[in-house]
Image: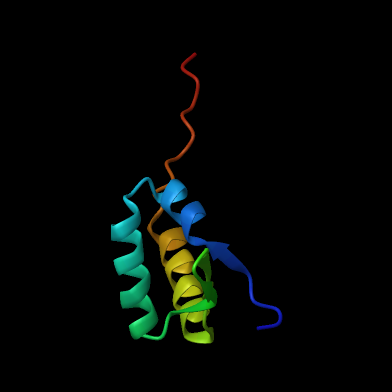
Length: 79
């Protein structure tokens, strides 16, 4: 698949701080829902890449997080 950024499963496991079976089951569920695809599946493992649907969902989540961030006003120095 050309132009798709991918990530190896062990990197996801380390980044998320979860057990490998948990990440594998999550990837399988996301794949079933059409958000990710397995790339280069072999006995040595596989990489995961976002589908178009997954990319759209990820951009929506990032946008929503930006809306939820609470910013407080700067305090005025007391004189």
